Length: 333
Image (cartoon, rainbow, N blue to C red; front, side):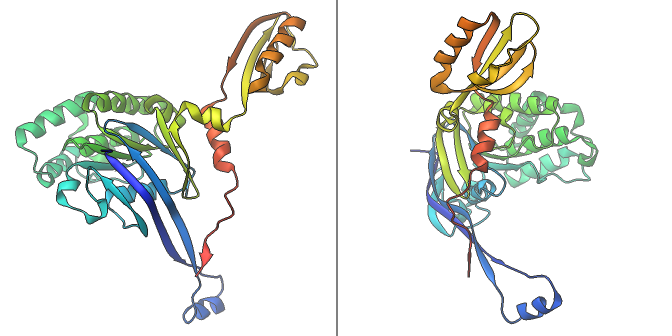
């Protein structure tokens, strides 16, 4: 049985459309215009125990709305979902003790108090046995390298340190499901890597099921083998991360280093020039043309080094996000 099972889940909002000007405001008192916003449209997927799945999409795609539905913060317009066998929006206490939600742009810790005070509050909320709580706290603070900072007011911590404290608070009660919404947003490279390393180690050790949203593709590549891509509230891809490049990118990149100090003047005939740093050049070439183009280049020029690689994942994802929707916009109601 899947740990997370979603079937035809939808969430629509009725949004008031206010026009500019005092006359329009006065008219709005008697006759209001609304637009129906379809945040999530008939989304279906399943996630098995122990999977760490990336949930990708542009801003406004429906990612955070889906996580809020799965955590029970909001009710759906239609469709069904179960997490650990529970219906999230029924908000049963037994379910609340078995999952956790971390939102990179929302704080769950008391701003003016040391993080340890919030941790004690979590111990009481989740009825964690004191000895078990202390063991968990020691383990997590050591893994995240913040043991010396738990007595410091949260407002005095750096953004990276605060996020690590947020993760500790979310994991103290040993959840079986972790919903992560942009956990590394705004963090520097060092902090990002620490959070990635911790999540990779902890998820494997605990066999925790994780659904991760992130605009930072390094998070996704470092942590996830499977990706669900959502755009305009609909799922566009659900499968191995590697398949995204095969499905949505028709080209590969060839890196060449020519003998001498120059790049041939007619190099554009072999593909689109992405980067030119003589004697190096990077070309984009249709996948099916790679063998022919390489054979022609090696036959005609003296090449000291050559390499073929996929396009960067973030470029392919960005192009996918930028594609025009299926012309199904919100409707006035």
